[in-house]
Image 1 (cartoon, rainbow, N blue to C red):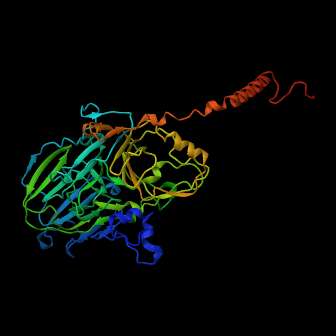
Image 2 (image 1 turned 180 degrees about the vertical axis):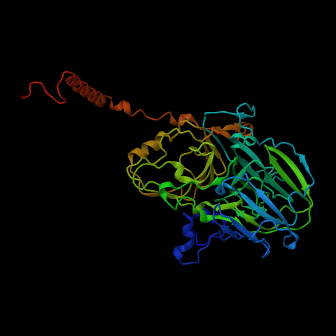
Image 3 (image 1 turned 30 degrees about the vertical axis):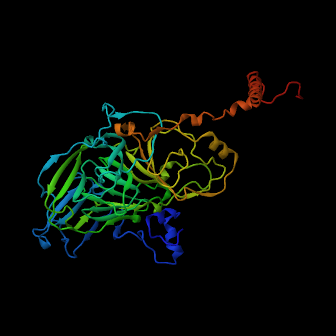
Length: 501
C-alpha cells in the first residue's frame, strides 16, 4: 500500500480498504482523504440532515408555518399504501418548491440514447455473438457535459412499462453549468471509470471517484461537475424497482457490501437567484424547463429516499476455502428485484482484489452457459478471462445461454499445474451488469467503430484429449460388455469359467 492515500489513484493500489487503517496505528477514517464532504452512513435507513440547525419540524412533517418561511415538499417514490418496508419517501424543506418553474419544452432526441428495447424497434439488434467495444473516446472538441455525453449500449424492456433496464456509458469533458438533470424513468447507478464526479444533489453533495459508485434515484435532481478534468464511466439504469442489498443467506449477518459503508449526503443549500435549466428524461425523451432560482435550495430534509455512494474497495469478498468455484452471486454489491421472485431484474457485481486458495480446483472460469445477460466493464487494472482488448473504459457483452470460457493455453496450464495460493485481480476492479432478461443492442453500439467481436478462432485449438485414450476406453468397454454378458447368463460379475466351485 502507498505510504500516503491522498489521491484517487492511490486507492487503486490497495488490496482492501482495511489496509488504509495501518493496523490500528492511526485513527480510522470512513472516506478517502481527498473527499471534501461529510456523509451519513447506512443503507435503507431513515436519515435526516439540516444545514441550519433547528429547521426540521419535529412531531410532524408539514406544519402550518415552517421556520425561515421555507416550503415543505414531499418526494414519494412508491405507492402510498406500499408496505412500510417498501415505502420510499423524503420530505424536503426548501426556499422555493420544485413546482416553481416556467413550463416544459421538448428537446431534440439524443441520437446515441435508446429506451425501447423491444425487438420490434428497428433501432435495436439481437445477437448471440459475444461482442466487445474498445473504450469510447472522450470528446476533445466543444463542451460535452454529463447529460449530452450519455450513450446507450444495450437493455431490455421499456420505461413506460415500469419493467426493464438500460446500460449506458458517459463521456464528458465539461461540467454542467446552471443545468440540472432529472431522470423520471428510473434509478441511475453511476460508475466513474476515469475522472472524479462532484455531484450536487437536492440532498447535498457526493464526491465520487473511480473505484466508487453512486445511486441517484428516479426523480431526484442533480448536477455533475468534473473537478479533475474529463470523465468517462458506466451507468446501469433500472425501471420500476430500486437497488437494494442482496440477501446474505448462510453467510449470516456480515459480508459482501456492508450497509454501514454506504454514505449519504448532508444538506447543503444554494439560495442564489440565478437562471437554471432543468433537463428531464421521460420515456427516453428529453424535455427542458427553466427557472429563476437554484434547484438545490433544500435547507433540510428527512426520509429514506436519498441518493448514496459506496467505495468498492470496502467490499468484503467471500469464496471457496476448500474446492470448486462458488457461483458469481458472491460478487453482488447491489441487486434490483423484478416481478419474478426467483430472478432479479439486475445485479451489479464487482471483481476486485481477493485471495484464491481453493485446492485441486480448475482455477479459471469454467466453460459454462447460463441464463443471464452479462455486460462487463473495467474501471482500472487488468482482468483475466477476457481478451487483451478488454481495456479500462471498454465494454464486453455476452447474451444468455451463449457458451464462454478461456482459450486452450489457459485451460492446459490450469489443468497441468497446481497453482499456489495467490492474490488475484491486484490493482484491478472489473464490474458486471447482469440481468435475467435478454438484451438488445442499440444502433449506437451496433454501428460503433469501437465494436469488435470476440474471435471464435480462439477456441479452435481446444484439443480433443478424449480421443488419445481410445485404446484404454475400448478395453474398459470390452470388459464391461463381458461382465454384462455374464450377468445376462445368470453368472455374477467377475465369475470365471473353469474356476473352483
